[in-house]
Length: 307
Length: 243
Image: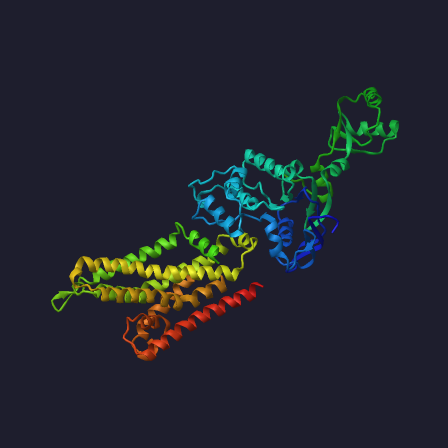
């Protein structure tokens, strides 16, 4: 089991002729936040559902807390808190009443469990507002409160910031971070918002069309990102010619009519500048840059960016 | 099971369907009372002591309450799917069969309470209209009739509720099934053989509303128990399917 809280092996889900999840191997370490990143509809929720035993697995295996989840769901569930898709509650009851029901059904012993959970997500305790009158953001917060109600060791949160306003997103991000850092919870979170995952996750799994393309720590992913010099010039073809002939430079790319990227960051920029100026090429900017995570995401998915 | 029953009771708080059921029960009483204003042989029906209590429960059973009870029961079952709470319950984890059993127990209590509500309304009207004509024995007999009607009608509609749990379709389907089912009782009641075994009219044999021999009562009890068994069989099938 190698000390993973969740480990999947060759996890696959096929709906009819469509493969929603294809041979996914996830490795989620204890006490860390794992961000499952991918565009909408690429299989993130399906993976989470399979991990939780909420949908049958076509092939492959899922270990949770070191044991195969199949047949052991009932023993494992009390140790997990989850929101999958939109959280469902009884519309004719208030948020507090809804949580009281779930707390009692779970056999939660802490008398202040509901109050504490609501406090963490920033919802009022004993509020008279019915769930049917809640905004999407409030529903999402209540879903998270329900997931943390019984103080689980593992949290599985499917797009937990969906529908939240920017302040709400920051609040949710902070308390998710706190749950991991302060309380040592292991958290699997899915999102299509790259900046969210980058701010929150310790480890990232990038998924596209049901395939896990990359799984690494945020640190490692950031290290992998290219450094380059962005050169803004008046005449790109002429500048490229000079770079090739005088500096024997091959590792560069043309971004547009005025921008070049030089991937050798050890170049003598003063000499390059001088050489270009001598040939009447105006250099309006030279800057050392880093690829963003979004650039990396684009590169490995071979497609468009992500929010 | 106690906690599940507590939760089911709590889930019905402020429920519009329950309020509708209560409203329907009150309306039955109002309509029967209005019907009692008709004059027959020089006096109004309602002037006869006990007429209101007798008529209200039979008309309520043939036209309204079985459908209302089936509607509430299937609403309780279907709502977990429709309100998307199934996932959360599954992850607690809550056994689906135990949950459905808890819902059926709450439905039994609801059925009895709705009949007792009708009893209270009709009883209070009778007190106002014929206080001196009422006897303790008469009141007790009516109380027993209403109480057993509540239990009998629950058993009669239980298979419909279980069936809706099985097919997991709209709970309004239960209302339609139960309405046809209870209305058919009107025609079945014309045959003494059929009314012994037809579950809706069997409830009347059980409660004592119909004058019936011991054999007929036993036949009716067996019919209602079979209804209960059918509901249990459907729920057991549901458990197998879940596993």
